[in-house]
Length: 391
Image 1 (spheres, rainbow, N blue to C red):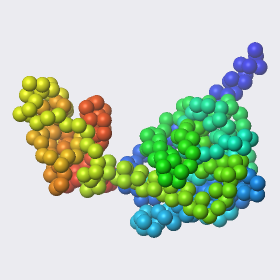
Image 2 (image 1 turned 90 degrees about the horizontal axis):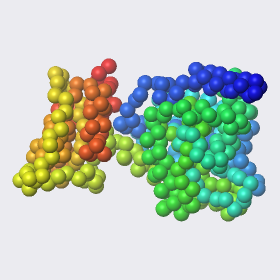
Image 3 (image 1 turned 180 degrees about the vertical axis):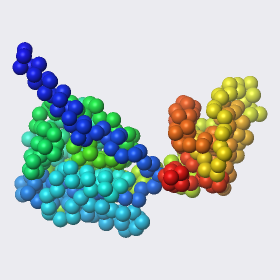
Image 4 (image 1 turned 135 degrees about the horizontal axis):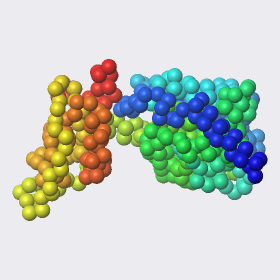
């Protein structure tokens, strides 16, 4: 009993010390608005003395490096304004903490780590994309253990990772405490990646999953870890070892990135919203709905005293509506901005972002897709730009 108590005390001390060295993800840097993707970090897993998984004579490190370089080339070709940063471009060994450091120092907007899987059961195949979180199954834990075990090849890893043992299930308890402010964005990208693998690359979809990956734990931006297939499966190994197969995987990830980029920037830029965006349902005009008019929902009064202010976009429609409370689920302080072919509807004007964010949760009860925007001199700008103007 005494030994058991001591073991738990040591575990608690380990977890607390780990969070002192690696604070919760939300607290690593000041929260930034991903209104425009300008820097992308692509992380080909393993490398150098770490071959990763091996199937036949195919090594993971070579497969994922080629996929990563192809992905980066496509991004740079179609989006020359985006800076693509690689954690490695050659066959070299890069410690996990250095990979995260590269992403953080680059002030990246997105982190994409590319891997290939392997298990004892050779019949298992398919793609899966992970986000940071607590594993829900033993299989997810085993994947995390395998990817995290690379730290055992690092010099002085016990001090660098404060005694973290990648092979001990108890070490992963700490991931239950992780507060990842970028989880929603990460899951969004992961879902798009899996959709592309399934619908366009015709790969088996093993779904989006959560697990405790150290490399994602240390990054301060949305990020995913993609397992592009199983080298332990002969058919999938042949696919990933072929130039065409790797090109298809890279193209699928690129299309997912492109969709994610559009989604993120549509939520932050007035000029990027198009008529293809499906708006939230808006009640019938006042004349048609007087009998069933919703009670007005009082919002905080407008207190804007400067040219820069924040608001909440609730809809983008092809038709013009009177911005009365009856037309917008009882919301007051609704105003309309026309920019043919669309009219956009906003709720409230707030002097700072924090006030707008506080109001957002109430608005989203009526309009789940609502999001915070910013105006400067009555022109819509990105929230990121607004934050810069406030400095």
